Length: 280
Ligand SMILES: C[S@@+](CC[C@H](N)C(=O)[O-])C[C@H]1O[C@@H](n2cnc3c(N)ncnc32)[C@H](O)[C@@H]1O
Image 1: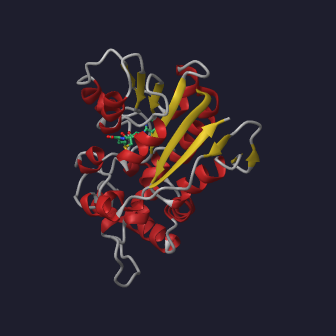
Image 2: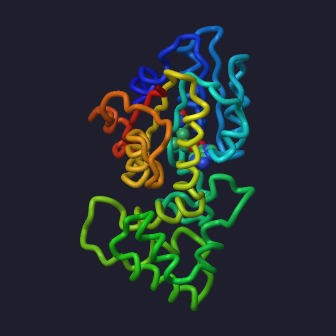
Image 3: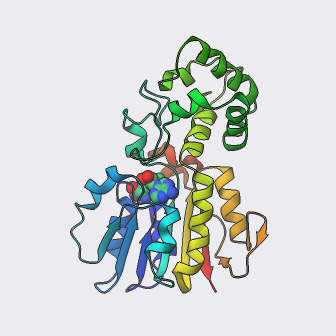
C-alpha cells in the first residue's frame, strides 16, 4: 500500500517525518522522494544489519539510528514529527536470509532475533522454557488451537536432543487436515513475537507517538495480524493495555487493505491492514 502510506503520512510537503521500521529502506526512499527540500526524515531499526542500506542513502535530509521502539522517547525531543510510520513485523530481507531462521521454507538455525547482538535466540529459549510457557506463547501470540499438543511434542523432542533449527519446528506433527497456510505458520509467528518482545515494543511505540507527534501530526501503522491490529485499533479509540489514555490520536478514515492487484504482485502483503491516526 505504498500510495496509501504516502497519501496519509505526508500531509505537509516540508514536514519532518519518522520511519520507525526502516528495513530495506523502501518506504524511507519514497518519503524522501516526496518531501520538499526543507523537509526531513529520521529512520530507525533495531536490526544492525540494515545499516548497510541506510548508509547508501546519501541525502542531507535523512538520518538513521540503530535503536528500538522502546528507545524512541529518549532519542527524539517531544513534538518532533509531522508524521510517524510503523510498518510492523519483519522485512522480506530478514525473512529470506537463511542465517536468521524466520522462515519455515528453509532449514536453518532457529535464531529469529531482529537484533542478533542481543537477547536469547529462539532455539535457546525453546531449549529452556517449560511446557506451559511454550504452550501459552503458541496460544496467545500464535492463536494456535493445538498449542498444548505442540508444546508437549517440543518437550518430548528435547529429551532426544537439543532444538537447533527451523526443521525442529517444521517437523512437528501438526494435527490438521489440509489447510491453505503452512501448518507451522502460527507457531513461527508466536516464537518470533516472543523472542523480539513485539507486543511490548508496539505498545511502547504507540505511547511514544503521542508525545513525538506535533499537533495535527499523523501516525500510519501497517500491521499484519489480528493481535497487532487490535492493539492499534484500540489505541486509536483512546485505550492502551485496557487503560483509557488522557491524550490520544483520532482515527482518520477507515482501515485500508491492499488491493487484489497488490496481493497478486506481492502475496506477503495479503494480510496487511493500514490504520491512520491524527494528533488533535
Ligand atoms: C516490515 S519491515 C519494514 C520494511 C520497510 N518499510 C521497507 O520499506 O523496507 C519491519 C522492520 O522493522 C524493524 N523492527 C521491528 N520491530 C522493531 C522494533 N521494536 N524496534 C525497531 N525496529 C523494529 C525490523 O527489524 C524490520 O527491519
